[in-house]
Structures are given as C-alpha cells and as structure tokens.
Amino acid sequence: MLKLYRMLKFLVCIGLITAFLGCAATQKQESTGQYVDDSVITTKVKAAIFNEATLKTLQINVKTFKGVVQLSGFVDSAQSVKKAGEVAGSVNGVVSVKNDLVVK
Image 1: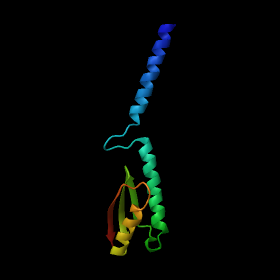
Image 2 (image 1 turned 120 degrees about the horizontal axis):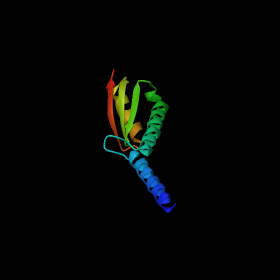
Image 3 (image 1 turned 180 degrees about the vertical axis):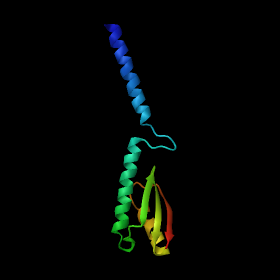
Image 4 (image 1 turned 45 degrees about the vertical axis):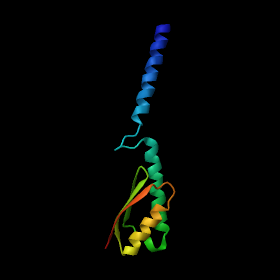
C-alpha cells in the first residue's frame, strides 16, 4: 500500500511538472498569461484608436506580442500615422510600438 501511495505521488508530481512546462514561455511563443495580457492590451489599443476623433477608421490593424504593439493598415495622412502611434504608446502595458501604417 505504501508503495502504491509513493507511485501515485510520483505520477502526480510528474503530471504537474509537465503542465507547468507546457505553459512556459519561449522566445517565439507566449505563455498563457502573456497571451491573455496581450489580448487585453490589443483590445485597449483598438478602443483608444476608435475613441480618437481623428482616427475613426476600421483600416488600422493591431497585434500585440509580449507587450510590443504592431500597427498596420492604411490611414489618410502622415499626421494620422503619428497620432495612431502616440495613442497606442499611451496605453497602459504597451512596451513599444511598431508603426507600419501606410498613407493611402
């Protein structure tokens, strides 16, 4: 009975270690927590851009990876490119902004 208890305890430990390693982050992959955080940042940036009167356009795409926000798409002027970058950078949690917006 004691041997069975030790074996079950060992298997549970191995299972927990495997689960924790499966959620760990690598350089090219986010952990589960980072993915959720980046989703929240993306939503906040999209909302901030939408709420900015000069940027009400649906042609700005926002992606976030480890706190770095990438803006892509088309805008009407160079001022809009600059303003979108400023708005995205002002959102809490944004590490940096990669602004790939193109003037149409």
